[in-house]
Length: 181
Image 1: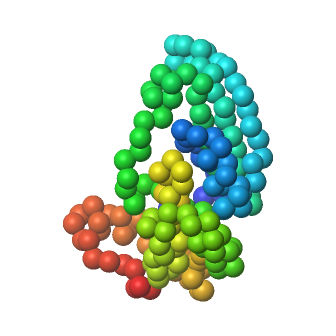
Image 2: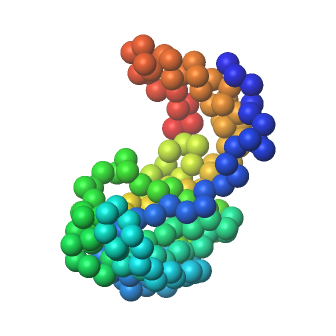
Image 3: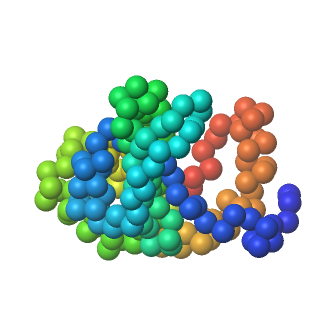
């Protein structure tokens, strides 16, 4: 087992996570009006990138720690097609955002009030957390995660056993170690 790293040597937080959107206004309406994330920056740019001049709009929606979710939309339909192909659906490809129970409940209510994709909005109890899932206008799956009471104990256990559990998995031991479900 390795020692706990000096946090001053690690990245301090996520700056932003970027995706391509087909519709900046639909994306804005969802993230700002329904979810409640403020639009904190819009960059309209033209740069030589990957062998051609690309003109695009880059928007950022702020999270509580100063990080952001960001979205690109290209002016040229060929660039849009090249850099923003349809994302295949997988519940295992998503972005998870930490929330309190109160924030999770408020988001769930706003999604319901907006009639937002009820067939794609659901809750899973993972034991160590409760997660509200929904898709954005681009097909990106979002998870709003509220930690369970006492999660610090399970987090400490997972840190302590992380390498051993990975080694066991790689050697074929696929027994669940989620004792909180």
